[in-house]
Image (tube, rainbow, N blue to C red; front, side, top):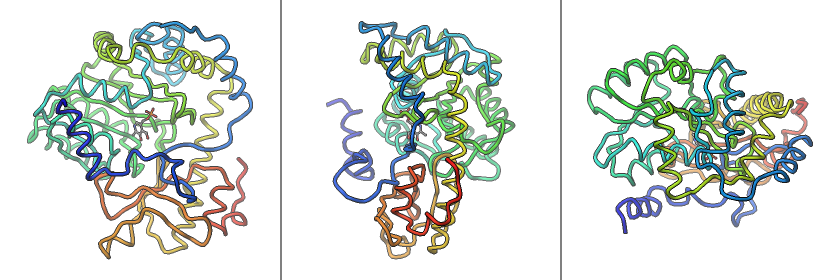
Amino acid sequence: MHDYASRLLAASEKEFAGYQGSATAASSAADLSTGEIRIERPDWLESAIVSGAQRAPLGYVDPQGLVGLRKQYASFLSNAGYHFDEGNVLVTYGAKEALWVALIANTDEGHAVLLPRPGWTQYYLWAQALGARAHFYDPRIGNLVAEIAALFDQARPSVLILNSPNNPTGAEISERDFASIVELAAHYQVSILSDEVYRYYALQRPAGSVLGPLQAGTSRLLYVDSLSKMLGLAGLRIGFLLADRGMVKKLEVVRSSFGSCVSAVAQTIAQELLSHDQCLSWIDQIDRVCRQRLSTVGERLRSHGYEVESAGALYLWVRDPLAAHGQCTGQIVLGGTPARVAPGHLFGRPGYFRLCPIRDRHVLASVFPEQQSHEKEKV
Ligand SMILES: Cc1ncc(COP(=O)(O)O)c(C=O)c1O
């Protein structure tokens, strides 16, 4: 067995046991552990999915992604003020594949990689499996730029992963800090993998991003986005990687070596959705729901004595009261249906848990029975 596979399997059995478990598995508890948007979808979206599926090509398609979809995504970004063309876009099987392909193409065994901690489980899992040396920065730290500069100097990494807003804490990197970090990375010849799947739900406006420097032609920058979070459609498995044309071509070869093309049906649906005149208002609606849910569920948790340390992206990051007794919380019971949460060790921080409250109201009402009478939202 190749080292990558054996290290991955070993980590999945030890510190990350249970991480890949299915959200719908076994228990009757409500699932607030999965980082997913599960709210009622508008009718137009369901119709656009059907009509996209009906006109999809059913043979192999361009391994870089359907040109129509790549153009549509570039035009979506140009509405936000960033100008790229279809040659800068690689369509992937979700953000996860984009990040993995970018990481394996930019990291060798023994190289150092700089990761956020608390951070998304997968980054650390990959670093371990690839035999890379993982170094960590805290995305919540006051002087992030100085922290990253010191780590560049000490660890000499080949890759820095940024994730703003951060999963699980919601911490955000400002536009100014992004610009300084990009400058430092150019100096130290570090590639930046910027995982911005939650940027649509950032509190800072405009959300910090590598898109500006990438558009200006800075090299070694890779930007990752996904319809899983942007449109709340994780099952569609459509992600985007944006980089200079040379990097995109290189990564296309890597991903098509094992994945041929991304599903042409999913890509045609994605194009239909991104070109729909209600697409932006759906993103705004998800954003409003996220803010409302984070705020009301955060209040509920506080009223039950939990210490909510932060809220952002799709998450509440909560101190784990069981940590004082050497245990960890995997489920909370507040008088209604028990609810599963994600324990902090999966994000490199035992002593916390992460909860995703972006769920239909009836699910939240069953977990937080008092919730109904307090909710005055219109969703
Ligand atoms: C930070 C982060 N990046 C990437 C992903 C993967 O997204 P996708 O469903 O597009 O693969 C997730 C999923 O939860 C995530 O939290």
